Length: 200
Image (tube, rainbow, N blue to C red; front, side):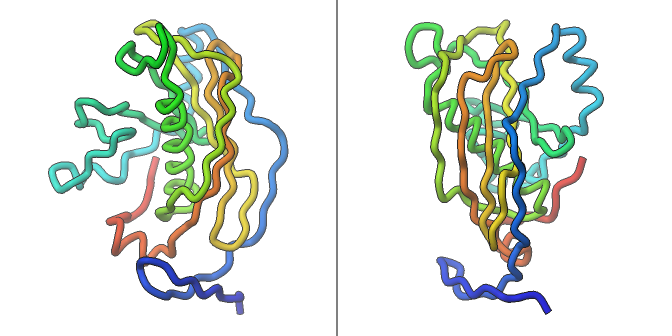
């Protein structure tokens, strides 16, 4: 019988089976291809269906992934092996300095990609408990810019998942994130977060 972990949080006290500890090594390589080849490569990936579309008009208005949020990022996601990937164009409305993507938007891109990794790879809801971002190179903005955001599981320990994420432009990693997520038991994800599963 698997060991049980008793956790007390805002949703009360519940028991959850411990997640086996897993570790992966290596950095997340960016995928840089000319636009025509990039489109072919994307077609080989499995596009993830947004599991919250049924909640449009019922409160779902996520700044990062809700398709109808007029001010949002409208991110979409793909499964590429162990990675969750998003391709996103940084419009000029998301600048910090001149023609430079705001650091807070970069953090959002990393955080949201990690969140979708949780929903799809672990089939549950989670919450960010820690996010560390290193800004290595400035990221330009503009309608002709495409960024690649990747997230991958680094390690799991009990209910916590440790994730590496990156933002790349033209094959160069510009920002990297180290994130920790707490995973809710599936019954809590369904009851409290209206999560019924993630599919491609």
